Length: 278
Figure 1: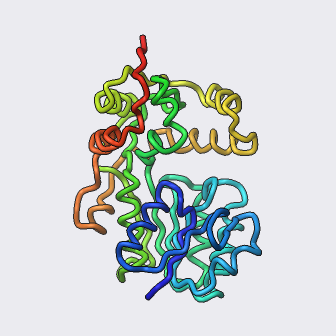
Figure 2 (figure 1 turned 30 degrees about the horizontal axis):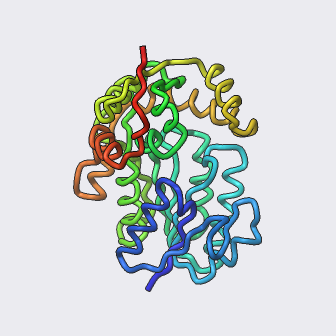
Figure 3 (figure 1 turned 45 degrees about the vertical axis):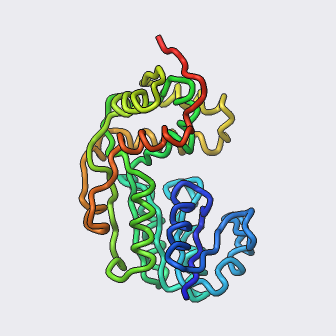
């Protein structure tokens, strides 16, 4: 029986990957500071105990694989994983992020079978991350203009990741994962409004305005600048095209944003009293 270390195992994709692996009967070790065997990206002394006896690793790096220092940190971890005996590494990466490539290359060169998952924007950002409160507030303010994005469901990411971790045929592959259609943030806001019955609007803002708002909201200063640079690089239209990689791996079409919005609404995550937006 294999043992898989799932880094970020309580996050959007990691929690789903861990649940699927357990359903398949695999031993799963969660990589987090609060885990039974703690793992901390900033404490390389925690790596060896977390890697002990591990056959495969799902690598999700916080805050982002494109941030300064990510390639060095992830590369050092990947080499430690191989030295410890891991034979398969699956890296969560970002689609259309040139600054993420050195991190990808560090995993590719670690000496194990590798698969890279370059992902479009997660639909779940609206329900499980930094866009949850804006949805509840009724105003989604982002420096995205009218750019279209192939929003990707984290459920599909997890299915692809588990396939790469447990099945042959995915080693040495870089997958670009997208949803089935292009959706602007205004379109997404409309889908969310229909699914929730809440008044809601999309407000395009500048990167500078977003940075100011993030700082006021308490986002650490060292994260604000690279986050805004990421918005500036990614949301410029160059990702406004689809791939069929989800379908090629899973044998089915990826989930649509409207399906995500309907299913998320049914969980009650947006069930606060509706607001009225002029």
